[in-house]
Amino acid sequence: MSSLSIAAPAPLLAPIYCGVDFAKAKFDFKSTQISGTLANEPAGIRRFLAKLPAGVHLVCESTGSCHRALVAAAHAAGVLVTVANPRQVRDFAKGLGRRAKTDPIDAQSLLDFGVHVQPKADLPPTPVLVRLRELVVAREQAVLERSTLLLHLPEQVEKLPRTFTKARLALLDRQIKKLEAAAAKTIASEAALAAKVGRLTAVVGVGPTTAAACAALCPELGTLSRTEAAALLGVAPFNDDSGTSKGQRHIVGGRQRLRKVIYMAALSATRFNHVLRPFYLRLRAANKAPKVALTAVMRKLFILLNHLLKHPDFQLAPNPLKNP
Image 1: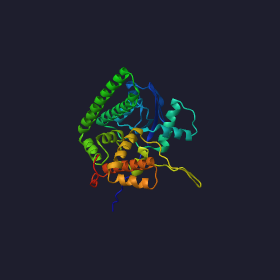
Image 2: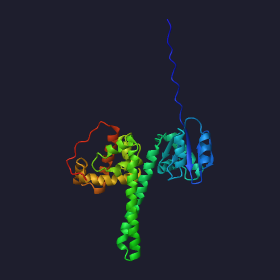
Image 3: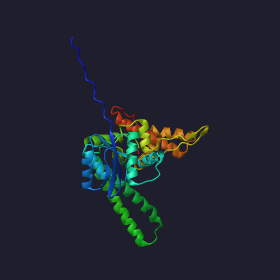
Image 4: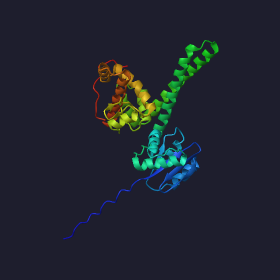
């Protein structure tokens, strides 16, 4: 009688982490197999990608713009990348007793962070999402500049400064409208993205601008757990207890740009959303501070948005309140 032998599955290879620390002109990298410094320019990035061993997972920090070219090239080459929160990495390094801070030391800390924390790889952004994010950020900067000018305008008595300020305000108004139109056109160019934004705007309090910002600033939305969603937004309350002492819980971290957008949406939801308005009023009736109650609304709203994208069959109940 013959027996059938089944080969054992090949063991999964542990990822090879490589820490990459960026500066404007160069970047330092460190792994168990390669290390060094290269120019932060196309030629240096190509040389670096050619050096990488199979199965490598890059770990770097968000540095504004210094990391973007290499990260984009790595995604295009199919290399796993995690862009970590700088505060989290720095706290990790301090926990290892590293007080000194140099580029090679930071690359080593990023390598150790990858090995011990084993962070998830970031989803590679599509060209449409990259374009949308740039439009969203440009609009935010224009709105901030407009708000600053509006604050200064009442204080200006001289005719010439007032004329210039009014002209700049008019220009900013036109630019904001053009940026919003460009964002809408970008969203409409990709069916999946348009469907995603349309689903988000079904929530009362979430308009096209908020939905576009959520799609651009949080491409992971729809794949998160409730806890991950709250932590990513930076509205998860953390305990501050020790022994019998019970400290006040605080929120910390998260994506600041995204949180500002959800804050404005939550303000609208406390007035017009038939679920979030009663929730906010119950918290206020329970003597919760306005900011505490509004933060809870932000958390509940963002978790709802994540749930909507995660479960396409989920249907919202009709809203009896007047839409904003």
